[in-house]
Length: 335
Image 1 (tube, one colour):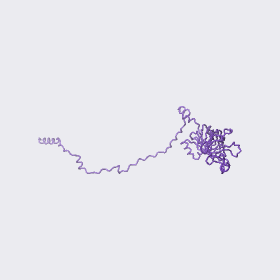
Image 2: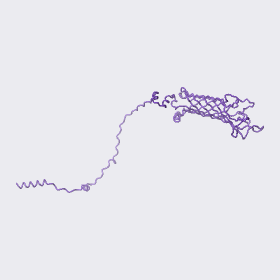
Image 3: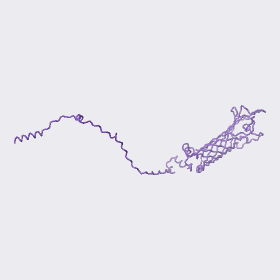
Image 4: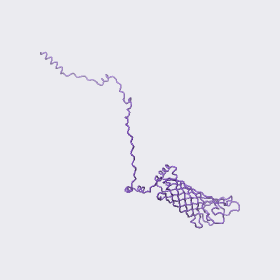
C-alpha cells in the first residue's frame, strides 16, 4: 500500500515539473536552407489584355431649345442708363432693304477724266478767223500758221462730298468740292514773223495751265438701289465755280502781254453736273459687305456725267472765259 502511494507521488511530481528550455533556432537561415526555390508569379498587367471601357449607353437625341431673340433696349431704358453712344445709335435713322446691313454713310469721293477745251475765244469778234487762244494752240500747217481750232485737252478732276442729310432715306443731300486741272502747250509765235519760213520760235514755247474748282450742292437718288436692288443712282450737282489760270514761256517765267501785264488771274462763274452711277456691289455682294465691315466703304461706283460751266465773271466784259461743255467718266466710293 505504502509502495503504491510512493509510486503515485513520483509520477505526479514528474508531470508537474517544467520542461527544459529549448535551444534558439535561426528562422531566416532555416527557411533559406529548407524552402525550395520558387519562380515569381507572372505579372497580371504584362500578359493580360487591357480591360475594355464599359460601353456607354445610347442616349436619346435631344434638339436644343432655340435661343431667345435679343430684344433691343427701349428708349426709356437707354435714357436711364445715360450712355451717349447708345442714345445716338437708338436715335439714328434706320435704313431699309439692302442698306440696313451697312455702316453709317457720311461722305463720298470721286476721281474722273474727260476732254476739256476752255472757251477763251467765245467772245472774240476780231477781224481774224481765229481768236488769240486758237492762234497759239490751234491746229497749224508746216509754217506754224493756225488752220483749225485747238484740240481738246485731257482734264483730271477729284471731288469730295459731305453727305449731311438723307430726307426719308430716299437719297443723301451733300455739299461737294471739285478740283480739276488741264494743260496745253505750243511753240511761241514770233513777234515779227518772216514772210517766208516758220512763224513760230523753235527755242521758245508757251504753256497754258487752268485749274477749275467748284463748290456745289449734290443730290443722289439712292432709293431704288437701297430698297429694290436696282443698281442705278442718278444725281445732280450745281453751284459756284472759280478757275485759276496762268501762262508761262520757255524759260519758265510768266508770260506778259504787249502792255507788260502778267498772264495770271482767276475767274468766277457757275457749274452744273448731271449723271448716273452704276453701283458695283451687285457683282459680289459678299465681298462688298466684307469691305464695308473692314474699311467702312459702303458702295463703289462707275459713273458718267455731263458738265456745263460758264466761268467768265458772270458775263463781265474783258473777262477771261474758261467755261466748257463736256462729258466725264470716273470711279466713286461712298463711306
